[in-house]
Length: 260
Ligand code: F6R
Image 1 (cartoon, rainbow, N blue to C red):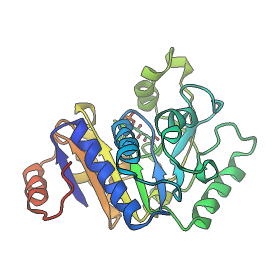
Image 2 (image 1 turned 135 degrees about the vertical axis):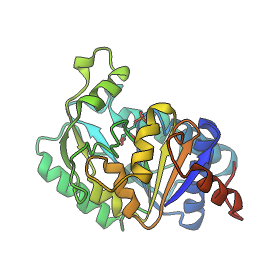
Image 3 (image 1 turned 45 degrees about the horizontal axis):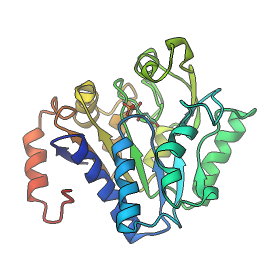
Image 4 (image 1 turned 180 degrees about the vertical axis):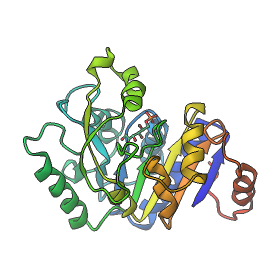
């Protein structure tokens, strides 16, 4: 695993966007795995800037989002469909039919989850999966206790996640209790993982994910098993890493490291 520590949120976002851009430059028809939440907002902004100012082309890209709340219609301001359209899809040139987001309103969740897995496989698998991390150590909505080989399925959100996400809703009671989410196994199948983390609220989860034991109680720790996983954390999120100096030393010595 590569750990990149950046001085602030902006540098974290730019470094992550640079890695996405490199994948697209090498493979213009790449399949991207998308995350929502507050952390990747800067990364999406930077990708939009690269699209507008540096002709970064998304016309052959296919996307698969990690998750969606169950019960929210696509036009609900807190649905991940709405989020992705608002912050990313409407600003770049990904063909609409290449965009895949789990349905939070299907009448048959098991059938939909199976279809989603098959669709990923049909598209050749995910080349690069963007990830955030929950303060309970989750990736996507794989809450503590999720099987590390889980696939796309319905999941009950943890109390911690409901509390964390209540900030986006008018009332805590408005936060959906269920989500449809790619599994840890689905995520580990992606060819490259880029996990972004910012702020001191993520410091403990990042330390557990990067340096703790691989455990289903911190599903982000499963990325230790991946052969090409990059964690990009700002200084606050990296604060509890015991090997911080070593990661910084490696990154500084890397000849072609993306720095801005
Ligand atoms: C969202 C997702 C979640 C978030 C995580 C962190 O698609 O997969 O795992 O990445 O809950 O959310 P923020 O970035 O809002 O702290």
